[in-house]
Image 1 (cartoon, one colour):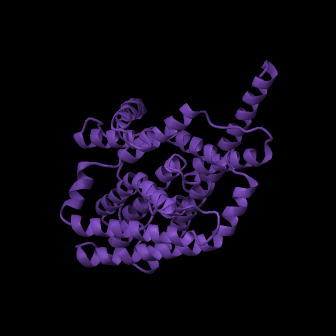
Image 2 (tube, one colour):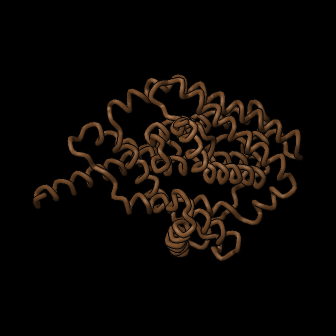
Image 3 (cartoon, rainbow, N blue to C red):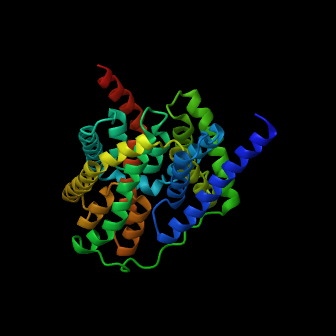
Length: 355
């Protein structure tokens, strides 16, 4: 490739990146969940369908994005969260497994539409961990385009419906929880150091242990270990880095869209929407089970088992006076179970399909 060709590719990539940042700003203003992921997805989709030459996110960038998302997830774990699970660990674990079973059943039903593999169906319907599941889906053999669209369709529905349901059905009273607690952490320099240590050490540990999707699961486990030991000093991934990671994941998925893949997703959407609504209702049923078997209120049980939209759920729990610590504990446990079981599920589903 000549100098003119290289300059053209750089300008092409810069244009797509600028479009992703602009779309992120618009989606952020609209209040969409994960606006940077949606912004990257839209910009990548437009470029993937319109461009004649293939453009891709460099592999080091993709690995760094996976690592940062893993660190963000791992940093959710702390001793207070684990203590909230200690008393009711058995019903919480059973409800978590129940959510996984519901997800697998929904994934099997999604395969009624042609062109959807077992792994793609299951990953599209896994309830919880949308960012992590999307980031690891291609590496585990799923169609990351369909997984991203359906995972975030569920998150969007939850963000829209959850406040209404919590108030109308469970008697939540917005504003009754008092002002939010300031938990800014030690600042971005410590957060930057924390993220770098977790990503570098996590990738090394993941490869040493031969973890699948080592770039995500390794940093996630290292971040959780540092958080539980107190060595993290409550540091978190700086917001700008977090947004950049989501944007790169969105670009990676969007750039791989084709007209055929869009048609496949479009044909699957009506059935997928029904399954997502059924999954949300099923998880609400599991929330009732959690309420009946623990000391949690009906509102706590509903918010703790809502299948996605973690930060929106925590905001609602804090604002309505629910037990935010218990809600976070159940949500984080499910998040870890879903992400750590995903590679095993992918392997099992591929073998079952081959058999």
